[in-house]
Length: 423
Image 1 (tube, one colour):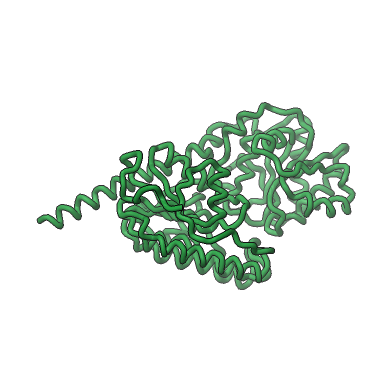
Image 2 (cartoon, one colour; image 1 turned 90 degrees about the horizontal axis):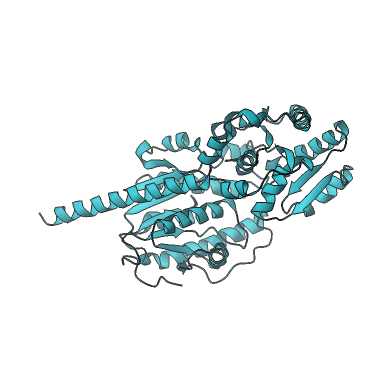
């Protein structure tokens, strides 16, 4: 539905309207960038900025589910049925579906007033091109992760590149197009979700003054609301069932631990039972592994706190949200030493050499034995400071400060134009 009033109107506050372009939500499934949108939108609302959203019918469902204002310009006619979106046919269908929302946005782009602050919640062209073309003087582009390079796509040297390469090639092209074009936007800022992304953006020619770290966060409130739990499980894992996540290494580690440790128990958190129950049973682990199914945030942290060690055998990650959640829950973490982890978590994680499954298994076993003996390496560390730095509240504060700075720049530009036009 269109907004109740023109975007240039003062609305309920003196702040300009914040317009979020969110054409990438195409199904009733919540992803990481959607959670980021939720927290940034709530931060803007709490700071008394009126908000408006551009997106499809799936976004309408999402806004209602998250309790966000339904002040939306709808950019498609319905939620499409795409089948398997990971297949080549599904990827083509998804591209067509996102293109529909892109043109739906262009048809309604005049609703974005000159006094607005526009935000693209992804670096895909269906959000960034409307951001670049709209009339808003203040513009913010969110970059959550770096795309694989063309070489990484062609030779599949990054773990998140699938055999078809179609989606990864599109990701690379879209990010190249968006970042190369957006740097010419006057008054444009890029917010990035991981510290290592800054150097990547500087190589595109951005100035440091255009770049603002507004990291992904963890739900500190949910983590702190759950008291310490009796230890029921030796290890815990949660995540997507995808080769990138090191599923084969996870299963091999569980099998190893059963052979090395008496009364070994593990919990797999989330909706992965359908994909993992059969291989777990075939490895003789059915009696050792508990599947929680889809759970609330509070139950997720209860299960984490009921475990001794969190294992993360991913071969590629852009941030590592679940690692932060495990640290917030106060349990040991063992992961491959991926590039993204040390800048965020430092010594709060115990690292194995990437892809060295034997080292990984032995390190997990060592930590389980230590934990069983009451030796938790986190006990002597300033975990509270890390948790606070990674909280959503910290990220929301950074976003609101940027909105305030963008608003000041927008006002200054308007004043300059006034004097230029009247002298």
